[in-house]
Image 1 (cartoon, rainbow over the protein chains, first blue to last red):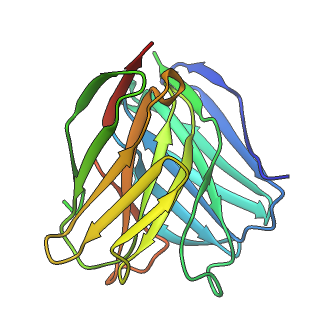
Image 2: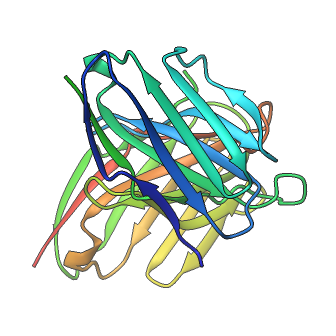
Length: 116
Length: 113
């Protein structure tokens, strides 16, 4: 299985809602990533988890809360978002960061988030 | 910002023609990768070139890397309508570790039948 899955595909939420994005991979990868991508822009790194521990937080506002419950799952909890947070949220994974010599990332199809 | 620049921003060609897109980056790197993204979908890894390599081929793709100029190019030969997508270069800076990929601004390629 060489696939990264993300649910839901689309999400519309109000500014007072709490919702979660889910990402799953079964490739045995030990690094997982969240990216945010606005229209016609490149993906911007938000968080990196390595061996289920948060290793990089790119100064993301606390209304985004990541969680890595196990090596296959990555969640992004959303609370009190702003309309400018509307974007495509991409999850990615890559092989063992302790042994890999390069970082080829496998991406999911993304969740299209709209904040009203 | 560490973000790389790509040019052109958009490229429109006919099927069968070659497409060349360029990427410039700012810091010393371990590797440079190229990814493709179909409209509104996830990214797909195309090819990786290491900092000690100058050229690499994979099928209809040819990548060059010039570390002295901090630039790379991606050539797609004999393009097809299915090649229509956005193409991003991605670098991992030596001083931040290779887990942190920084993507270039992207080139939107349109291949017309």
